[in-house]
Amino acid sequence: RRVVDGVSFDLEAGHSLAVVGESGSGKTLIGKTLLGLLPDAARVMGGTVSFGGAPLLSHSAAQWRETRGVGIGMVFQEPMVSLNPAFRIGVQLTEALRRRRGLSHEEAERRALAMLERVRVRNPRDCMRRYPHEFSGGMRQRIVLASAMLLKPRLLIADEPTTALDCVVQKDVL
Image (cartoon, rainbow, N blue to C red; front, side, top):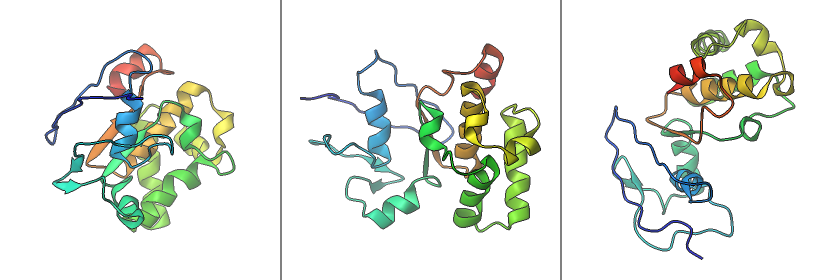
């Protein structure tokens, strides 16, 4: 069955776009399509999807690895989907910076701490030493936002990024 049909949009650098619709209308699938993360049961039946002039639907696994995170980042609806429960927050935040941006451990840690402060995580240094399960849903959401923004992707897809956040932080995030 068709879940999403007739979607068309262009997004210029520096602009925002909101995709609004009822639950189950395909908003998340649109985001996952832009990252090549469709579930096995789903497929694109027609049309084109491009980013920066490059067609995404024909990307190889290696091209997707280069695109995800740095080119296109995503904040998923449920933070625990993005956080590994076996690793401390600091390891998860700094690893991508070290691998994808070639930063030293010290510089990656400095940037991670600054980003945690930016998303209003109380005591960022303590946060870096803790595991995801030690935080509330709202704090995990802030950590995931920090993680996605650390790589400074050219496009950031946020799937209901303010769901578990209080009103003050929602405004800052948006």
